[in-house]
Length: 306
Image 1 (cartoon, rainbow, N blue to C red):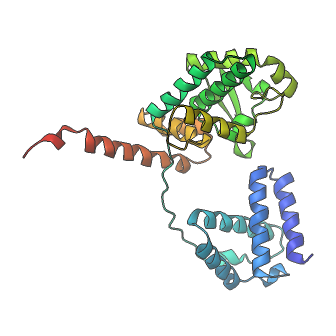
Image 2: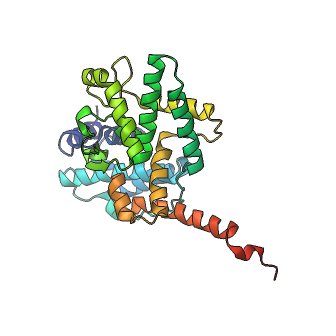
Image 3: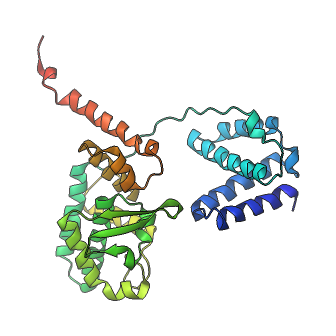
């Protein structure tokens, strides 16, 4: 093991135990730094020059999409900031490099509200007509999952990691642990959503108590994100919905719908758990696209014959 590899391990431990970074962030750092180490073939950290870094960054831009390249460069910058902080290097080579990104705006994919309603209608129908107790309980849980995703805009990882004590149905409050273990509270405002969650809680009380997680299967194990994805595909097929719906699209639909209803973007930022308002602002592009469509197709001027 060379000098660079040893320091990389030390840095990752620092990120894990002192910075307390999210496991997914740690995994990304580990992958990005290993890739850097394998590519530059530098055994000593002092041999890494601005020129060498520029060549590596050029390779990243040629290989990856802007968003991925930006993340990998950010991982590397954080690592070199640590090296400077620990006095492994006197001058940070990134100080001599000018990096500029032209990252294309990729609009988040949302679920049309008519399609959202269509999905819920078929789910409630399946629940109402379930012929066995096992199937009825599964349908109930599935409806509760989709209703909560749409009602709160939470991430699928946040939903699957919900604990029993995080859900207070008396006060209709959900405690969500987001990225970087940041906490936020979301209220259940809709009565129908509250009722289905209450029904689910009563039906699955034994499984929830045994597992500790809020969403569980009938084998008393936590619900996985793969299970949720399969479940959404199943009901989409039953409803003859052609759109490929992913769990994250409920989050996008939640945010966009609130923005279109003139909710202040800072409230939406807080409800989504975004660390920066700039992340939330992507939804303004979606709202503008909707506005453009409305004004193009609905404005009466289109029917004038001048």
